[in-house]
Image (cartoon, rainbow, N blue to C red; front, side, top):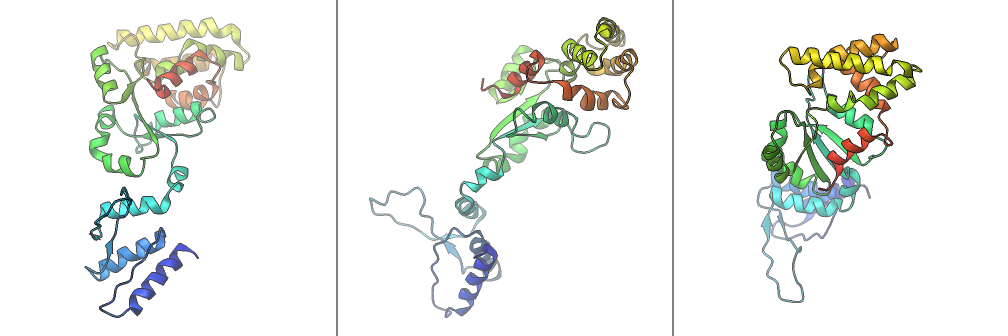
Length: 286
């Protein structure tokens, strides 16, 4: 019987029993649980739960009826869903930097991670969780969701290195937050090996040296603008223009971000060293 119909059965049984009677139900039906919650809402004080979990019935047990509450419902929902909760949720959830709002860089990091690891880590689900500070404080803001809905999933939190010291990184690691070894995600996407593969895929391997020279010039120009020498995010525009010109690229992305997301990310494959580095920094157990 469909769970909604099971709930209707409970509602009918409740309406049929005499006023001073008790109706005892043993069930894992989510429909009945929801109907019981609705009955308690309409007729306060009429529904109680008996929790038989975590008890040793080789000994006498005193079970006290519990008034309906969110904690009680969560436990019964867990029983009702059982192993289905594990099936419905991804095995691994990665909270990464980025916003789910806006237009220019909406879900930027998430989209790149999805592209790179979509085939090799199909059980991983990436979520844009805001800034690095948002990720650091995610338990304080969403701890209940993580502890209940995501209790069967492995939770990974990853942020860019930026200018963090080794001590700062060790403190973040202690809190369960992974920190990329490079300054930002662009550092991986604009690696020499990725540019070399881009040249090869466009049948212009001879342009590799020119592309690398242009990349170094773009980084030097970035430094002259008072940016850090490893800040690829600052130099990405010049690198994009140089690669586009040297390789004669078209339909490769209308700006540096879409170029990185739609053209460079798809060519990073598991046989590449840059892939292995990024994979280890995100998914390794240590």
